[in-house]
Image 1 (tube, rainbow, N blue to C red):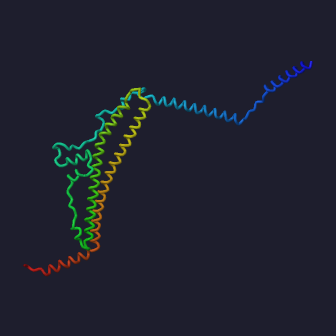
Image 2 (cartoon, rainbow, N blue to C red; image 1 turned 180 degrees about the vertical axis):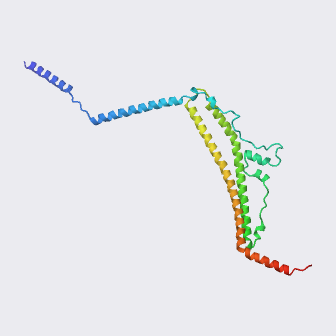
Length: 270
C-alpha cells in the first residue's frame, strides 16, 4: 500500500514539474522592439534606394543611338575650320621664309626672328662719355634700349608660342575627329566604361583648348604692354620738352633776341 502511494506521489510531482516548465513567462523590452522596427525600416529604405539607382544606371547605360540617329550631329570635313599654315617653302616669299616656318613650328631661341629683324647696335663706350650734364640723355637712351629689349623678348616668346600651338592644333584636330567618330558610333556593344572614357577625353580636349586660348591671350597682352610703354615714353618725352620750354623758354628767347639784335647791329658787308 505504501509502495503504491509513493508511485502516485511521484507521478503527481512529475506532472507538476512539467506544467511549471511549460508555463514560462515571456519578457518584452519596448526599447529593443522599437529599435528593431527602426532598423528594419531603414534597411528597407536603403534597399529601395539601391534598386532605384540600379534602374537609373541601367537606363543611363542604354546608348542614345538606340533611340535616335547620331549621324545627324556629325560635322563634315568641309565645315571644320583647319589650322592655317604659313607657306615657307618655294619662291612665294623671298625673305620671310624662316619666320613663317617659326610661326608654324615654333622658334624657342629666336633665330628666325633675328634673320628678319633689323640689327641693333650694341652700346659701348659712348654711353660712358656723358658728363654730369648728360645724365638726362643717358637715361633717355637707356629707356629706349629697355623698350627694345622688352619688344624683342615679347616677339620671340609670342612667335614660339604661336608656332607650337599651331603645330599642336593639327594633332588636336585629329583627336577631335577621332572622338567624334567614336561618339557617333551606333554600336550597342559599347558599355558604360567606354562612354565614360569618351566623356573624359572630351574634358581633356576642352582643358587643352582653354589652355591654348589663355596662351594666345597672354601673347596679345604682352604686345599691348610693349605698345603702351612705347606710347608712354613718347608722351613723357613730349611733356618733358613742354616743361623745359615753360621753365627756360623766356630766358632762352630773350637771349636769342638779344644775340640776334647784336648781330644785326654789328653786321657789315663783307
